[in-house]
Length: 118
Image (cartoon, rainbow, N blue to C red; front, top):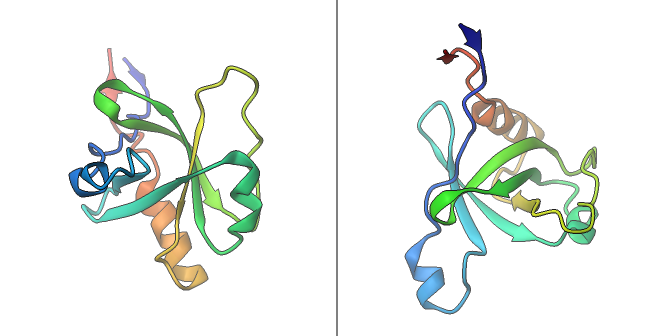
């Protein structure tokens, strides 16, 4: 057996914004605690405009969902722009108002590496 992290997938994009013509701009991600966190898609070039946000990078997965690849603070700007042809998506969470809340959120979204794969 090999331990592999289970990828964190978003829930289906919320229906209301889709019906309002906003497409799949919004995604919920559920942390290990069970809490849901709302993230908004942004362009890679706009990530530096959100220094007080939690930023995640994700890749498209089945059924309109997204699979998280990295999470961090916008102020650290550890996220590189995607290369040409990359499907990488950038999302920000703006509702955590303190550094402690943002760090707790990142920890809650951390992949659960306790799952075992054969």
